[in-house]
Length: 196
Image 1 (tube, rainbow, N blue to C red):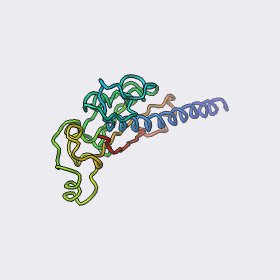
Image 2 (cartoon, rainbow, N blue to C red):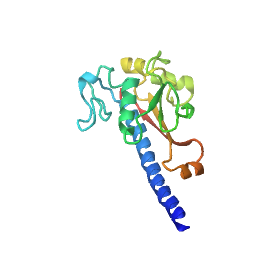
Image 3 (cartoon, helix red, strand yellow):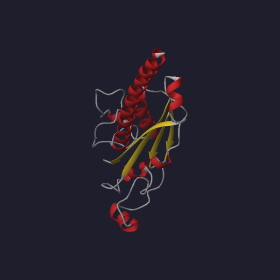
Image 4 (cartoon, rainbow, N blue to C red):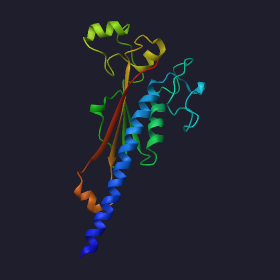
């Protein structure tokens, strides 16, 4: 009679440790993705942390950047996916989507939301004009597309980029799955000032 209870406790502890690992991984993935999106570098520059995996692990500023390669949505998604690899390899990218609107992914997969979108016109001529028009410090997505900004750097010093990662955790044990909500989400977002 005691064995089923003990097994449930053991599997519960295993799932709890997996949730803790997934939470840390999701937070790191969001942070690394945001750092990737705001570091002014290109794939040809090869400027990022040499200890990382691939040409764009997203850790360093490069003054001689061309604004392509490492800053693109696909490169940001690659960085997030590489960080999430121990947890899941399934993801869907949602460019131009704020963290609060990031859709719920399928069980066992992640949604990657990046705001602002990679392409799109620049909304304001400069940071001062943006502040005056908005009446507050600009937030992610309020100054136009990232590509326009890294090309012209008009909003240097106030251009924010936000990356959100939503992971739909899937418990290992069916009994634990019945105890958790249908969609047990682990969510993290990171907003970083662009270094363009």
